[in-house]
Length: 474
Image (tube, rainbow, N blue to C red):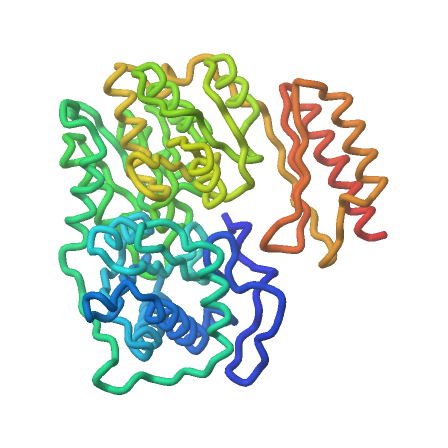
């Protein structure tokens, strides 16, 4: 499956010979992403990005009291382009006088954890998450293991106007590899699972999508006692996310049936999202997994506040929380916005249907392995299957149609679109909902309709999408 973020319409093209005084950002909602070899995912841009980020770090005063240079951690997933981009980033950071720690292939949440554990000033992940191998990207984490604030991203962007001026040789940054990074992270993941419980007697298939968890996830589950069948653990640089992992769940479903497993866990290429499958091959998405975690915590008196979802969270989940008297709020689409909402409300749990799940009491960012362990905690603690833990929760049919439009088209001013939406809302009433939104990464309008009637959902989604097409053609 190709990500919505595969093509960033807000990309500013880089050359050392052009003016950068443009209004659009390089950073999207999840760092910088694009096709390898095309701006901005080119060696020269990434080296300049590393240099600019390094200068921002070096201009801060946290290292002055120790008389030390700032230091960052660079991790990556298993894409072949990671080697090239890692070297480019390292060169730019070193030129700015920043020390670099290299972890090799590691999940995105592992880099967030290690950045905090090693008391570094920032963490950088080279990954395009669930996108195909031809794409890649750069994500930054702060010293606290969270996404960089917008102000820092703006500052890094502003630095791209300046030419690279290498520090004197004696002040260049140094680099070294961390040999025990996988072991450190495995122990951290295990620490989020209760010590009085284990996974003995449970056969689990885990699909690592030939990505950054290939040498991590199976060990975590095995050391907790599970009988593990690991698939998607032979990365060759080109097969990441290819017909496997969280975005291609049919591979996991078939493997669970083939191995007569009790459970299946699928992660994406960088390990920050998860979906699960029960012994019958039934798929459970992020919305359902968040529901399981929330209900279990409520029953044990461990739920702090409520739950954060997104505009795309299934209406049945919201209704289920309402019946259980669990506060629920929606953020914009994207785990970054879920995290912001959690921090604003002082809550600890949130997520998306795509499988990005955030448990702030366990980690600072979304983590596929740790989220799966929270679901396993509920299963072992309650002695129930996934089906048992979601009994009474029937997701509403949902239809999403992406409509290509001209750049700058605003569907909100179209009388034709408004009329189609109003007719649909009248027909669905309180048994459905409609969401229209412009993509933040492509020239698309996304039309989402959900409701109890699958027939109505499909019909109204197509009619509204048709109205958008007609209005856009104008």
